[in-house]
Length: 289
Image (cartoon, one colour):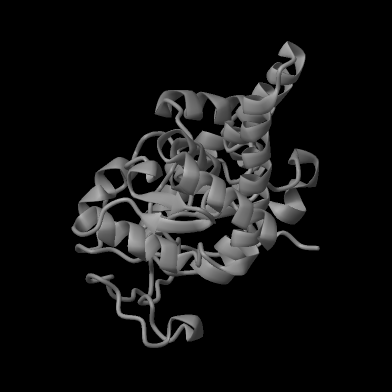
């Protein structure tokens, strides 16, 4: 995961530019849900501003960082993710088969029949996610360490719930890089213990960030970055050095898939060259043949 920094006022401005009048309609819908005290299905229109988040997130999933198709195919591959589920909530990990026997490092909150209905049309409750992360994994789970607050309308103030997942947009939460880093292709907590460790551990488990589907793709990035770094060191021609430097910059760009993993590998390469070389060579072995 990476942060997608944007001033909250700028995000609101982009939404209004993308779909004039959307914000007013969203307020009306929120008021209707407040009166009903529940999310009422039908006539959903959050997809109308999907393009704002696609552009902000560089066409990447907010959670696994997989690069998705462009805006032209948004309806097929980009899903509007409600960070806090808009209707019911299930207790996590519950009876999820892949987590059988797993004990979370802290409390993760109970279930709810209504969920965060006041945030169904809150722009600061949206992100773009792939089908794997949004529909298959996140679904209607939202683990929190504290007490759920279904009455608060300000997403920024909901940090009092002590959520265990990370919202990466608009600076409303901690930078994911403060919680999760990478050792080779594996996502690991930055901290060894404490609340930040617990958030990282739960997030990694929740989104199955070390599944082979993702580690194989990270191996491709590390292998390519390793070759670019080594190539730059060995190159004698100025043009070749520039080409390798440009390649390195592309892998580290937030617009590139799995850039958080690339950044961690790059930092390791500067700090511990021999270990980085070993990991780079191992990454090449993981590539499909």
